[in-house]
Length: 319
Image (cartoon, rainbow, N blue to C red; front, side, top):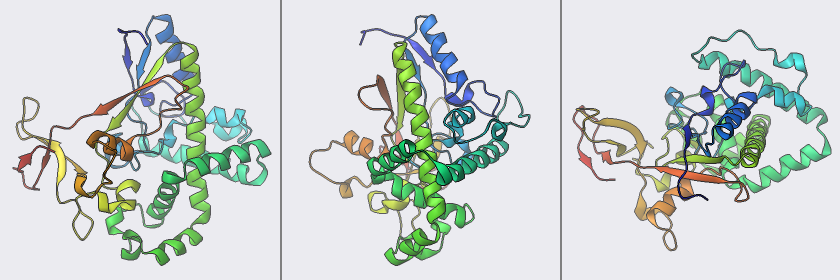
């Protein structure tokens, strides 16, 4: 890797696309070509997780899953999962994103792709999907169940779900897995499509000597599969709400500081031993940008402090 290099920070959702939002399709490849032609070797993407509150990539529903809005529809046609007329897009606004309309459009075509996959997928794609599920089970199983439950519970925060589900009573979870099996498998399939397209895009960048710089937010969202599945690793009260939340004390940018709402880790309860503090954080929040055979770098997004109150004037201390 060269000692000095340069590139551009751009979230893929900002790329041009006829499908309502930037994605991993032609616009992304054209941007990589632009970087290569301009002698640039870095593309910093910012987080690529499935957004929750405020459509913010820093309030993701999972630290490990991908944002399915980034799936390119025409690539699903090329993969034999959809017909060309399936991906005819409505006239989306430009240059701003209508997230509700785009999410509805993408959900429709992804669900159709999943039905087609279940009906007549090739043996090779079925094997590829099963391998992905097996390799990713350590985060994918909880995430897919979380998304299926969230939809069944009216898209409410997990603390507002039926208590036995919210607090992961084993019998209730097994009943939910049985009841929601089709939706759970669909969520796994959507993640399979996301990472399939993302890896191909990373390969395209590597061939043009462009390194991808990923982004690892040091904190995760409260309404996420990560916190729901691992409550014991966060500072939460008996109802599952954060006791303290992340933010930034008053500074030149904001006279009153910022409250981000992310729950803090309970470091004393995280597994001890070989992991440093940052390693522990990365173990929870690091998303696999791509295998080590592909070129990438990562940025750990730092946080300056945390809030110990919910009033307009919180108490600040270092996190």
